[in-house]
Amino acid sequence: MGDLDGRVAIVTGASRGIGAGAARTIAAAGAGVMLAARDGALAETVAAEIRASGGRARGMACDVSDLAEVEALVAATRAEFGPVDALVNNAGVIEPIGAPGEVDPAAWARSVEINLVGAYYCVHAVLAEMRARGRGVILNVSSGAAHRPLEGWSAYCAGKAGLAMLTDALALEGGEGIAVYGLSPGTVDTDMQVRIRASGINQVSRIPRENLGAVEAPARAIAYLLGDEARDLSGRELSISDPDFRRRAGIA
Ligand code: NAP
Picture 1 (spheres, helix red, strand yellow):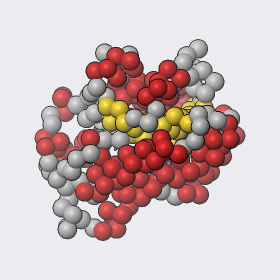
Picture 2: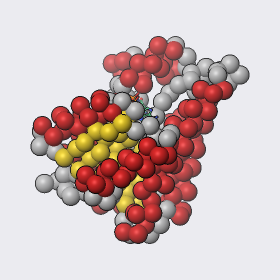
Picture 3: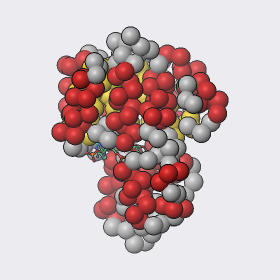
């Protein structure tokens, strides 16, 4: 029994990194969790680990930039666990890394299609039912890059800035009973940071691996925000480095 007992959650980008950690923590708190990633087999491997430790989970292939795949994901979640109570828009890519005048325009557009449009597709696929039920949680995984430019990351910064505004727009008119949050997870030791280090571009690429945060802190924060206790924070973009928020979420 946990804070999310009986709830149903979708976590995108849950095959590894922050999304996999969040799915594990949400399932341990009692929710049924659908884990989505383009590599559905890897998402299902994480789901199988969750089931082996007593949780309810399933993994599924879904590219969030494909509306039909997103709609199929939501339908499969409803069939497996019931109506969706919570959506965690975590799927994201850092590429392309490079100067705005030099990166491939198609790769730039693709980044925004995943980081922003994909998140919107997921919102669109769950919102009508959440509104009809008068309850739901939408959590967008944000970044410091949403609020300040970083060299070489124009696509990522633009996509995350747009996602932060989508959080604001949903806070304004998502609907009665729908809680919405942005969460900046900190600089976390995941595959994304491996690619950032390899680029050698900007100050983030020079952060030593041992100084990166563990996945467990944002995972805990995400699970906390999905629960009823966090409701008064709805509409806010939260940061894992905020001491008050860490205390509330039970992060050491
Ligand atoms: P990661 O280790 O690279 O994992 C990214 C996840 O997203 C994977 O499961 C990946 O699986 C999935 N994904 C990528 N494109 C997708 C698509 N089109 N459709 C569905 N799933 C997709 O990254 P992470 O560090 O855990 O990042 C998770 C989130 O936190 C991202 O939104 C990122 O921007 C944000 N964030 C991370 C950091 C950090 O320091 N790590 C800092 C600030 C914000 P597939 O490749 O199989 O699709």
